[in-house]
Length: 114
Length: 113
Image (tube, rainbow over all chains, first blue to last red; front, side):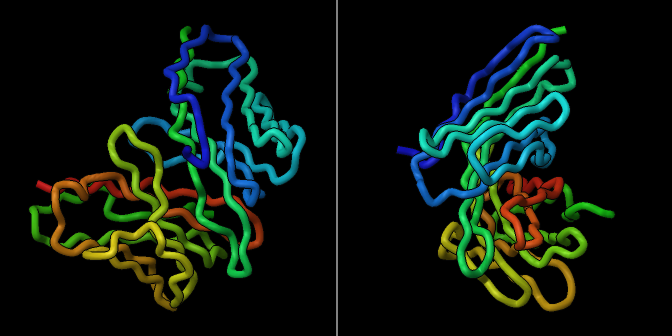
């Protein structure tokens, strides 16, 4: 079983729709949760960073963490064609030396249809 | 405020040659991580460094790969005697160390002929 599971998609939705992206994880040591957006042949861009259960909102993006269920989500409201990209969930824990490596999901390829 | 910088952006090597990939972290960041992304695969951790120290190299292949982050200058990922299977995108990320998030560079795309 992978430490982080993410539906690879592809996912296609019409412009303006609400998009829901999800990941589950098995390692209870994970404390920090991130969502990255990656355009083709570009580096991952940090979208959302959370470290506690609950919701965090930033513009059209809402990140949700449920540590009891080991489940995280990213919601995109009023989706735009420019949101078409691969979305990666990532998470890590902390050690005495600093923050651990990120463990990534495989990514969900999203296409917003104009 | 410049982000994470990587160079070169594209690197072509023949089998058996050496590849050197460079990463300059964001200003104020002293933690550097290297990841590899194979075609149609996710990002896989390779190595975590702080200035002059390797903290975690559990993702590094045992042979041919090495990394350093000297007191002065960029972090370098070195691949000796490259093989075709080394062809991938190599990403560097940096972190301030006080929080969990990591910021990625644009990557170096290595092609081995």
